Figure 1 (cartoon, helix red, strand yellow):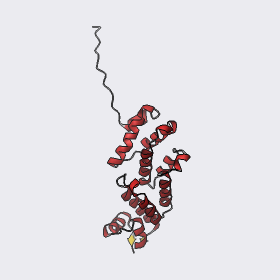
Figure 2 (cartoon, rainbow, N blue to C red; figure 1 turned 90 degrees about the vertical axis):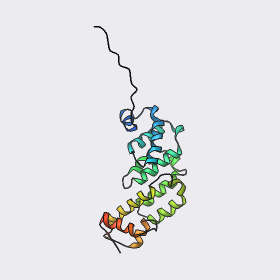
Figure 3 (cartoon, rainbow, N blue to C red; figure 1 turned 30 degrees about the vertical axis):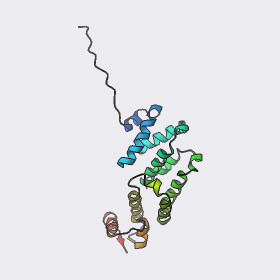
Figure 4 (cartoon, rainbow, N blue to C red; figure 1 turned 90 degrees about the horizontal axis):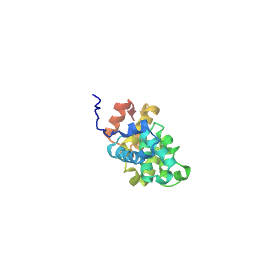
Amino acid sequence: MGRELQQPQEEASYTVEQLVALNPYNPDILSDLENYVNEQVSSQIYSLDANLCLLRHYQFEPDRMSIQIVSHILIKALMAMPAPDFSLCLFLIPERVQTEEPFKTLIVLSHYLETGRFRQFWDEAAKSRRLLEAVPGFEQAIQAYGVHVLSLTYQKVPRAVLAEVFFHHICSSCIYYCCGIYFISVL
């Protein structure tokens, strides 16, 4: 009687998505968000909400901005095309930063993808191979986007056009992928 049971206080463990949902403007989660970007790159997952949250934090603390982290966010956003993620992320990056490398190159690559200029895209991507290879699955994601664009445009796609999407490495498995998934035929 009168004796209170005291339970030990356990430190709560939250995922990054929960931290973003609970308190997205807490500056203490900045390092968690940066680590999560690296986890997204290594495990080939993607969270637009967490990435936008980190970019908003960088707006408030520009001196803590990591060029490598932001470039990884933009590359992951390119991989999410046709979703407008790249533009959403770009709106949160200061214009003076966008004029610097590697952001300038990523903006050019985005423009080529949005306009369906795959040959120019792959030529420019080849110049930035080191930057893009840091994110596994980049080439495959862009090829999938290209096939998606072709499926909206063609019923019968010329082999030369398909070769542009697949970076000139067209093979029977690429043709099967296009025909089987998107129900288009190759001329």
